[in-house]
Length: 142
Ligand code: HEC
Image (cartoon, rainbow, N blue to C red; front, side, top):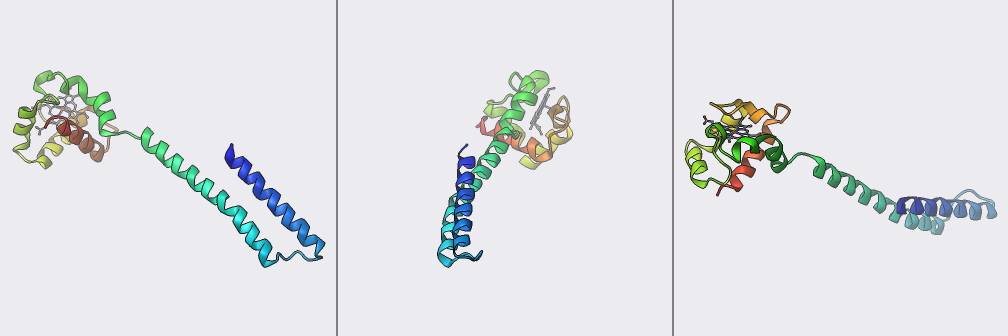
């Protein structure tokens, strides 16, 4: 754990600085000592920031994407044209659907239409997630 090692270094530096201060008979840090502490703290701060970046990167990977929602909720019908579902990759079928305007296509998928269940059965999907999934389908049907 490099974070632990850096933390250890910071503690060591602080103890050293405090010990030196004691020799001078004063708990006050000299400007030079303060700079030393700041220098030692700087890498620690950047390690923490790097750690946070990793955490948010992991969160976005774990989060659902249009592609992952498609795989779990839509492909059963839209890969094979079940009940007349426009197939993903069928350029003509999607071009035809889009003639009514993309907002209508989004709304129909969110509310359901004919054999298309509301939100394609992904009831815990937000509207934005459904839209991202439709965008994924359209990107693969051009
Ligand atoms: C049970 C099968 C089924 C599932 C699951 C399903 N669909 Fe559909 N979908 C259909 C059918 C059938 C239609 C055609 C409906 C019609 O026009 O009568 C359709 C149509 C659509 C349309 C076109 C709407 C329009 O206005 O023409 C979109 C967009 C769509 N689905 C998106 C999705 C998404 C996104 C998912 C997954 C979250 C999904 N579907 C899951 C069966 C399904």
